[in-house]
Image 1 (cartoon, rainbow, N blue to C red):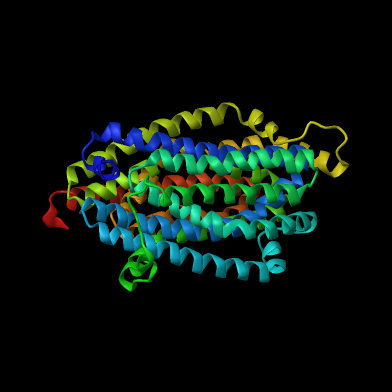
Image 2 (image 1 turned 120 degrees about the horizontal axis):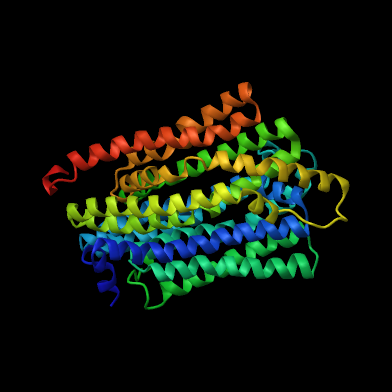
Length: 463
């Protein structure tokens, strides 16, 4: 039964298959995004806007370490999808075993380094002034659970590579629901403040790990690995590394972006300006969940059919994914342009007994965030092409173009823009950098994807 499931990636109609893959992925990402969103709302209402800013400071470090697991997962899953498509199950098993070993070695090392350099990292990422103490509390506790999160991110991509999106969806839902439940208990009931927010998130990671472990030990998975598969294999590690580096580089650039944004905005408007970006950052994660869902659903379809040399299906999956993703991106754009004030107010406490500084911060954020949000999401309808285009090269194992296109938006365009434009345009220069980078990155990606379709996806002998 499991074998039939993975074979369906090369047999079912692309439109139906993409929906089957993308809907569970979208639901899983939605729940995870809602978790981040509602978590921020809880923290903002029950602790205060400075606490939201503190969490925003910590996210780049914890996300980067967790992204190591995702990088290893996506890199290895590309190999697994193509191996299953080529009916090479032994390579798929060996790859999965190497993914587990590598994830443990790398993330535990990074956590140890992260804890050792805690007092230097937090200020570097914008945790200054009154943000530092709550950020340090959150950061220290979160790091204990990050290796489990990394294993979850790695395992989730492998589940998708097997063609089992519903199990992957459940794995994404569990930590989100667990975190929100623990938020209520630890923050609202026990009144643990930042300690409660951090332990609630860590508890969610542990719940997710438990489910992922159950999946691979049960009969649901076709990857029945044994002890020899855990031994590191240099050729496989090299392939995992080259493809996974794309994801890792993207997250590294994202972390650098947070570092720069938090520091630039702190200099422009202090803690309150960082809180504005924290809210917009949550919406960047939440609002685009259906687009990311289509991208996640597209990856195993493109990888499996590329491995099976079914290039017509690969091309059809590209066109269909771009069409679906563009449609939902446009709907998201319309909603964000109409309701930014209502969205912003969700994150702010209506209590009148807040300290004076918190009340002033609330007022500042409510005035600035809606306009900023409109500019940040101004180019949302066109980002589908950029995301699907970069994802295609990663799915089919072409590491260099995947890396370059993945870095195009943030690394080649956005970071230079935020280093230059705020100098001349102030706060507006920060927000206008987002749509400019989106447009430029989409143009570049569209060109390379069109060239790939016209020259490479014609017949097997072209590879």
